[in-house]
Structures are given as C-alpha cells and as structure tokens.
Length: 291
Length: 188
Image (cartoon, rainbow over all chains, first blue to last red):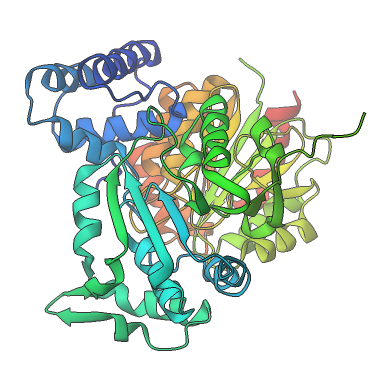
C-alpha cells in the first residue's frame, strides 16, 4: 500500500500551486467543471492521487492529457468525487430519520426527497428501505444526484462487495431495522445486489452542486459529507440552494461533523437534532399584515 | 528558526496511554496548537475525556473550518481524515482510508507540512503500522522538525521504526523525555 500522493507534495509548494491552478482552469474552461471553490487541501490531495494513479510525473502532464484526450475526463471526475460510503452509515442518523422525520412526512400525500451527492447509492438504498418499512415508499419521488456519471451507473446497479454486508447489517439493526438486511439483497459470489424494486421511484440524475440550480420542491434533502469539501462561500451557496429546494418545515440531513457556523444561510434552518446534524427549514417570515 | 506554532502528533496501538503521559507533562503555558491523530477505536468523547483527564492543556475535538487554537489540544474525530488548510484552519474528508486508517496520520501530516512549513513539529509515537512515515518526510522536507519515539521505548515499535526508516528524525527520544524536549523547543 503506497501512502499515495505524499511523495510529491512539498518539494516546491509555489510550483505546486501554479500547476494546480492550471489544472482547475483546464477543468473549468475545457469541460465546464468548476473546482475553484473546493477546499484546497483535499482537492490537492486528490489531484496528487490522480498523478500517482496515472503515473504521470506531475500535475501539468495530467492537465495536458485532460485538454487533449477526450476519454480522460471520466477518470478524472471519478478521482475528484467522493465515492465512499456505507449503508446506514451513522446508524443513529437513520434511526432519527425513521423515528422522527418519516412520521412527519407521512402527512403528505406526495413526498419528494433529494439526495445530493449520492455517489454509489448506498444511502439511497438505505433510505428506500426505511421508506418501505414505514409504508411510505409508494408515495415518494426520490431524486439521487451526483456529478460523477460512473458513480451514478454503479448506484443504479446497486452491486456492492459482499465483504461489506456484515457491517451494513449491523448498521441496519442499530438504525432500528425491523427485518434482516439480507431480505433486501441477493448474494452471488463476492457481491451483493440490492433488490431493484427499491429503486422503482428513484430517478438517478447528473447534477452538479457547484453549477446547477434548484430543480425540485422537496420535503427532505440529504447531503452528507459533501459540503465538507467546499470552501465557505460555496458551502453557503449550496446551503441556500437546499433551503430554496425545501418546503417550509422541510428536513435537511447533513454529515455528523459538518460545521455551519460560518454560513449565513444556516440562519434559515432550525435544529431538529443538532448532534445528528438534522435541521428543518424555518417557516417563511410572517409579514405583519396590519396597518 | 521560526517559532513553533503547531505540533501534530500521530499514534496507533498503545497510543492513548502514551498520549496521556505526553500531554500530562507538557507545559501548561505552551503557546502552540497541539493536534492529535490517533487510530483509537474508542468513541471520540471517550478519547477526548481520557486525554482531558491527563492533559495540562484543554482537550477538544477538532472541528472543520475552525482555526487551530494555541494552548489547546485538538483531536481528530473518528472516521474522518483531518487536514490543516493554509491559514491554519481544519478541514475534514471522508476519502478512502489510507492503509486501512481513517483518520490517517499521513494525511494530517502532509497537509500540516504545507500549511505550517517551518513552524511545525511532528511527533510519531507508538503504533503497529507504518502510517505517518510518509507524512513525516513531507514535514521535514517543508522545514518542520520531526520527533520520533525510540522504537524500543514504544508499546508497539513498528510505527516509529517505519518513520525513522523513511523520514529519519531530528530527535529520537524516549516518551519520558519527550515533553521536556517539546517544552524547550516551543518556549524558547
């Protein structure tokens, strides 16, 4: 196991910065993907991982290939997105969704849910299972979006390594699961495949939080551990987009360690459970109609 | 030489005990920020609580976007990589574990080297894997100082040994001598 991406950094930080800026420019100008407002430390680390993975000698070589080789972009996007998750990751969050959020959603005849940054879909299938068990699934329209098309394809397939199943089953039980996770997948060789009925109301779609706009009116938005990669202004802008996508009283579920203290748009949310990063959109300001 | 603003500490197997002894002997007037990355499996509250019982400095969990604080110990939360941005603020990531570890010492040290340069001391304590060795090399390349626990003195010698082999060290000392060394490097 190579401690990737460290061997190269720090030799000439000033040169590194120039090369990284050129790479970011190439992504934006040539391909329309804007990483300029990503938090620099993680972005740099991922770009170095790409350098290592593709055995180029520096970032500039990567940038050259990005400009001239049309088949290269998907591999770069794969490297720059966040494809890692688990089913029912952070079980207390899914328990709170089950026990507090879904009962509140059950008053609506139609329920719209958006997961922003769904990556390989582990959390969408987790959510779908919660909705099935609550008897709400058939009333739901679920949007699962990501800017990484390869991840979206994998999310649609719902195929994961079988070695994960045991930990995910434990998570499912800890999240208050009433059946067995194995009821929802079939195992074959070294893989499990999630029951494809779980995605009958899911639309997987390409959406980039940096450049794309509000597209639905939702009662629940999930976006866990995505904003941690964004600079403060971008975090705030995306938070405002979630606010504008949510009905008043709608729910927002973020990652367990996300910090909204520097985002003015956080004022439009109130905490349902601040330790679980579960929020509700505040009602519209009530205007004084008298006088 | 630039004043030491930041001390990053990495450890794994045997880490909580070693940290308790080290943090318990630091000068309570230490002006630098102390940042800890441990592969401990216990809950974050347990870890912070345990260290707070022994540390001469206040211990809190490191929070994304917040600045490093002088005279405090800030601990990496479990299951996230902790990074330091330029401007000495924390960032978190859920990128893949590095060598089965998240938080990874290499990730913390690599980012700290960039953000802090010469004003950095990086410390490798006991541990049963090689995490931190590549990060320590970055720290030294960027002008920071490396302190490694003597392998014979460590509960698990593999981590300090790997660090010495790959990166070398400016100081290789027993745990009992480490706090006074750090106090001296920071307070003069």
